[in-house]
Length: 175
Image (cartoon, rainbow, N blue to C red; front, side, top):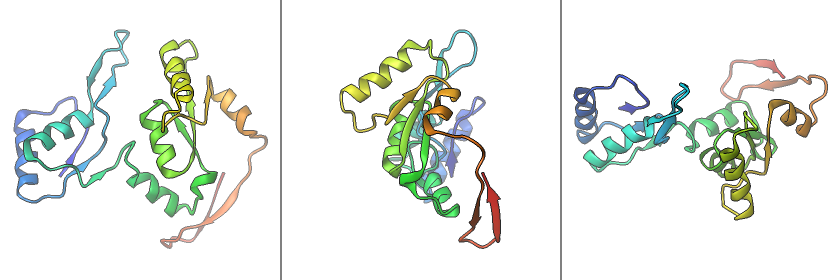
């Protein structure tokens, strides 16, 4: 049973999810985000997939066996393996100081917080506070724009590498 973010869920669907999990279905959470912020000017918090998963978990007494989204590492480990990437040489670009940085740190990646709007004082303060406090998920760096990120990692001209999928599928090129 997969429980994820939904803007149209019903009580009937939550009840069915709880019944399936109680009856032994594997519990997969698509995300652990308790909330997401609406894009409207109000910027209000609304329940995220993690809130729904938490609801189901509270009712059934079962915690998700797999969390696909951040900060769960299942999906990301699958991608690292599929593309034969070395985690310590992989940049995890984060939008959320704690959740996304925790993902990068857990995987052993370099965690960089990308603050899309450098006028967002709260995000900048959160990132700086995490670094200063030595928080376990503190990002390795904070940048204010995609341009700063590109400059910081020294991307010049495009480089292509050849990757052979360990799962078969042959060789393919990727930037």
